[in-house]
Picture 1 (cartoon, rainbow, N blue to C red):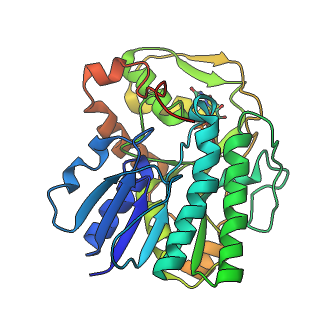
Picture 2: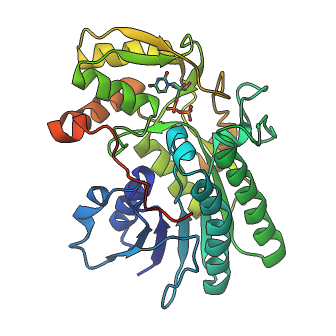
Picture 3: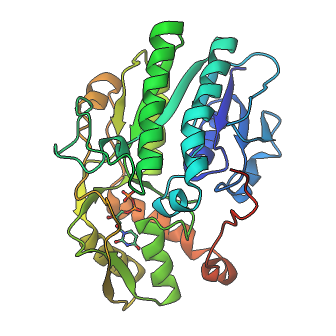
Length: 327
Ligand code: UDP
């Protein structure tokens, strides 16, 4: 049985990846320090004989006994409000944490895939963004802690690839959504659905003309699976090119939830990218991958998940307490 380590396993993407590799018949070692991850996301896997969980912070040395075939490094806060609350941890997890994961890959002769992001393109001056574009990032802005750590992660990963001959893969993930997103993580989709379910106004930042392109999680997981199994070490964009303005997106959520909420405009956060759309030609050509789930279908599935949350969960203002966290 092939063995895979998933870091950030209790998070939104990490937990879906655990599910996928369990389905594929792997032995899955899930790792998370539960700062932004939630045990509920992986609870259903604990009864399985081919699943185990380590409560561990990957910025510290990672010890895994025995053989290891694959590593998926998905540990990181991924929402702008989290980066503001835990900026140093955000920097550490994609720098020191990536270094530990790459060292582990080298020691075990394992193939490693790291989660990069469309944020490495910053507020892009090229549209849509292809992998050749170097980006437009403010290193010291509020998003800099995430963006620069992810850029450093790519540099470190390529260095391990060229210098140590480690088998590395880099996925640049564009906005992704689906069940298990954290209701109050500040991202547009859970924010809007949460507001609709609580009967609050829908807060659109700026004038809502900024665009994003939203990919359903199952499509993303398929792309990552194909990339891991490929022999392509260069970065690959995975995302859905179906671009929409945030204002229109808010209106779609109002329709979906069948509520009478109003859109209210709020101040645009600093360095909020004005537009974002993946060029997925490389993924199409090399992985024979393209997204299959329409926004209509994906949003309906996601809404089903959020509707089932308890009233208590729905009204909790802050899901994560970072106050005891060591920096
Ligand atoms: N956004 C918004 N209202 C909210 C939360 C987010 O208008 O309550 C906007 C945000 O300013 C950004 C877009 O929605 O332009 C997507 O934000 P998200 O945090 O989901 O992802 P990112 O900015 O990292 O792409």
